[in-house]
Length: 271
Ligand code: NAD
Image (cartoon, rainbow, N blue to C red):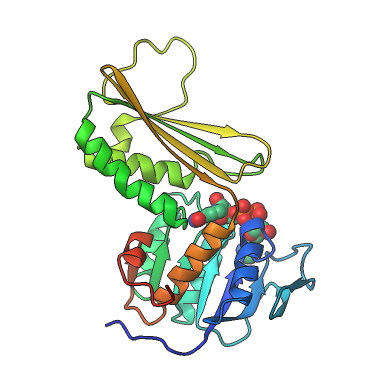
């Protein structure tokens, strides 16, 4: 049963010294729903002990969670998720997972943990991207498999996984809407004598360059026309704000694996 949470939420942020984690830290610090009690970094991280300064709090970066807290937001890397997942399960504490690139075994661990704690997982916490994912399924359904689908994602040069979790989620939305599976229809880049493009393929392409925060383009090309849906993330604020909305939502929820769609389909009390 869902229990409404009226207290200030004591928040731990894992990956707090990273690009997105620092943004969550800054946004949480000026959000009256939260108080940041732990800014967690990887063991041996150079930022250990450094102060993450912001408007309301000064959070020292630390590598262990030894304070009382209500929930944890994870923007580490796939292996980091699993480490903090165990901590959350041991403390019966909700979790919001923003890190991406989990393999099948890691996804299984997240699914198992969600039998005992509530977890929101999203490859992209941007509200705009979530809306795109919803519309893209409808578009794919209307157009059908006569339209070729090509998904192109572009990110900064330091991104470690490809394709992006968001591109994969978009591809799943297209596949689900048109009775396909990624296993049988996805093609990741093309090279050499590929032959003609078979009908029904979903092409997924990754570009890595410069400082681009996040760009996703979904092209549908069919008889006489091409439709392109494009989302561009200009700053990590969009992820931070979405993750905080999910964090406020998940506290007090029953154990389960939730999506950002579950969060968005509930009224936003802070709006
Ligand atoms: P980053 O490399 O800047 O930050 C990751 C940080 O996590 C690093 O500082 C690293 O030292 C730290 N870390 C690694 N293991 C850790 C552990 N066990 N405990 C604590 N900290 C640990 O990367 P980034 O661009 O901030 O992205 C982080 C992750 O979030 C990536 O997987 C990325 O794909 C994902 N991401 C998701 C969204 C979303 O909306 N879901 C948005 C942006 C990024």
